[in-house]
Image 1 (tube, rainbow, N blue to C red):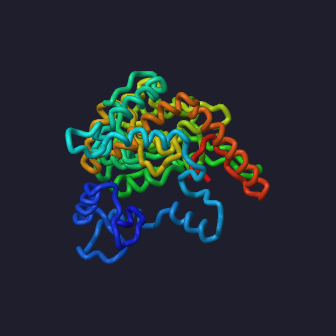
Image 2 (cartoon, rainbow, N blue to C red):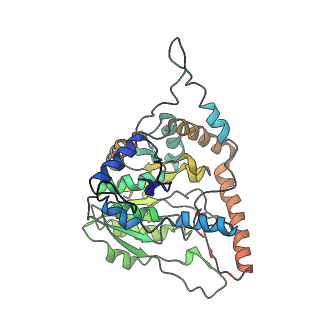
Length: 383
């Protein structure tokens, strides 16, 4: 259990006792495994598939050892927007013990399993125009970070040994989830450009649609896509996504799981195109978002999915069984934060601010004779 959370062996840290229970049951039934001595005889076999270590922890340790700038870990070190603190304070006032009658509100208690109502309303206001249709609570799952959405989506939509295809390079959490769930994962790599010039851009990494089409069969359950992508920092164009959508349409049972957590941090005036907005794609697409990435507050662990009710429902059922609900107070604070962000032009400012950091870092790397891949988007772990 501790191996999953990266904490010392003498204590177990989890988001809830419910998730500890799930992990214990999986360990006892041979679905989890750790490297240390296991009293029960044999922990889960599937952990062996992910026991090679956590690259983020490795790079963080090396950066600390050598006093280096840590470009390998996925969290911002420059602080969160100023409106988040007051948002937390605002939603934390009402749930106070009262000897006579009920508290003003119950903001410190369980939220609705699918998502806290105020956040669901704020998400609808933010995303309905972006998806060009009215989104309601039935189209939304708020999970314990976007990473929980990866796990729950694959677990809810696939059985062991089912085939999934993933465009790579990509976030390692997708690969680990597939390994734990004993899925048959096929990677389709982006075509790498020549690195002879002083640098290249992420746009030069191309998806060979012929190879993608060859990798998908009528047995394939899920196509995993990451745009804007990490670690490359590529923003797929409308034309590229239309090519992907055309392939998907050839397979009536195929579902797209698209990781779009960097949607609000694109550079050079580019626009992020959501594959779910293309013709006939919304009904077969689950789109991941991360308010932790958007608001530079990765420790909040508030993310989730947008999609049709038919796909959201089974994933929500599984997430409820594991975690029941996500942090109520931070969901409510995120709802206030979304409104403040819209009023203050935060989403527009974020891309401009981060592009300045990208340009500075790429200049420094080139001066040091290091050839960077110049990203089109800020992936916090893209370097």
